[in-house]
Length: 344
Image (tube, rainbow, N blue to C red; front, top):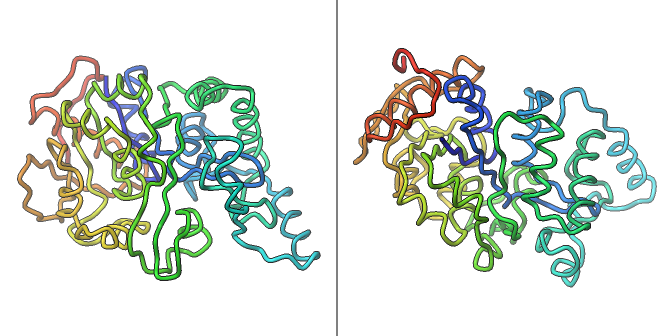
């Protein structure tokens, strides 16, 4: 059995190869929910949905979010109405008192749907409407995610990191904003001064997540601060990782990040924006997979390969390096599909 911690696009890209190296029925993916937002009354779970759409074979692989060839008629009309009415496009946070009333799973991250600042495709929106409706009926986020996974016929298990709300808030030189405002609306332009995982003190991992963390764990090449950080902030998660074999894939090549705002975010919270900084952020990791061009000297076992992931063949190569790293720390497991060769 093997568990992947997933956020952003890095780990979902790795899954493209993982499911050919490991038996899909032995794979569990724990998804970050710190990026979730309630937009126009529906709960959007971007990191869960990327894995959901990937597993269902409908993911837009050009953007690595949303559904391929989805239409956007509702989103287009929302923007037309706002412009015609002379309304500010936003992001438009709902009033402070509405951030902590009503649906608990959406706390601290509620936005108006007026001229929505995140483009939601029409089929994509149907997923969010279904999710929100089931939550309102009394289902937990874990139960809802399982039902949606069944609807998309996922071959592996998908779990949210918690049933409780944790909101990733970025403190910048232009004020505090939700991560989605910082990344989607502001294009990561404000200077990061700190990152807060609001609500993490009250959140707990589900029994299913704790069971999954008893298995070997892969931390993919996701953003250490806003993709993996929210999970680590939840009570019991980092402690569980300290007790189980963990291999992490660096999203950096020395001090160059492959994509996204990881460097600015790491610097903002006090980590060196580099592979060395990733190692400092992951003291629980037993081994690392680094790029061939990454000469960082770490105090733990390292397997090197070309870690750029542009297609399924790349993802399989990196996954085989992950398997080799597990072997180096004596955590081979008995369930993966037969692995031949070594990382190239």
